[in-house]
Image (cartoon, rainbow, N blue to C red; front, side, top):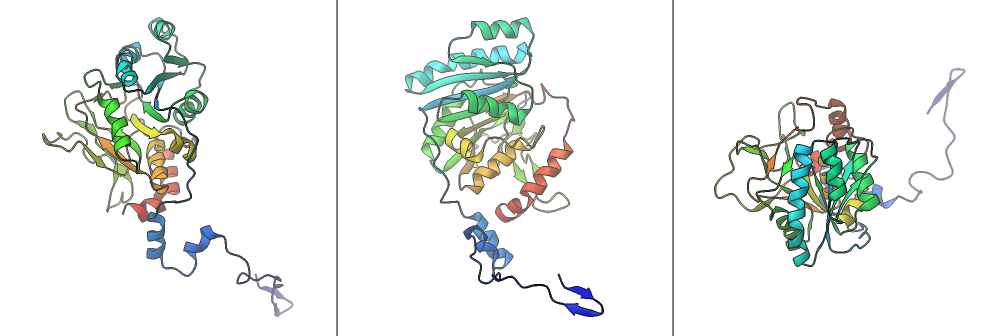
Length: 312
């Protein structure tokens, strides 16, 4: 900074190494002598130096957070137990990890006690969506694919949906994550992918574009999308480790979209599978209308520029 001393301008001391002579870190290269449009194109390119991640046995680790709610968790676990033989027949490992955040209901505790060996209750967690899921995954998940699943998703009538998601990832190695179309009990769409508003006052903000619509009779089996909900999201375990798990800065929401965008930033795609009317009893474990605007503001601060470069 130029300083004014006794009426004269005094120039600051010039360092021996000027910015022109200092070596430039490679990550800063896109920001020198380029237009913003050029930087946008650079941001869209995958990171070819992404770490491969540690190997794990082939199989699926299903992670569910739960607090009591026997009417939800008991039938869900029973449905997953019924699915396990199909994974075993395919030569895939299968485990259900229930992250319990303080259940006291006798039916829930009995479920944990009588469950088969591949169902494990991870107890003593203090509820925080991102942190609790991370604790269960990093502390207990064994297989090369992980599924984060809400306890209010009903898979009973479509037991093949989980294997369908695994096969989608196997069929398309460029994908890092897969979601599942979810429906309200009345048959309308609850979730069929997440997108962002392209214009208007909410430009760049996320929304569910197909909510409350009817799925076309000849809808595609799967399609690419920007992001999917963490109510049912499957991800390659190596990618989840590479990203560092769910961002624990978010208290209650936006961590799922942030995870998807982190995968996209590493050049791994996100797709969604339509496996039939898998129900999601949305907000069955959360008060309706309990939006977290602090999380939403944090999300836009952290990801607004990437969304503009990548999605708009």
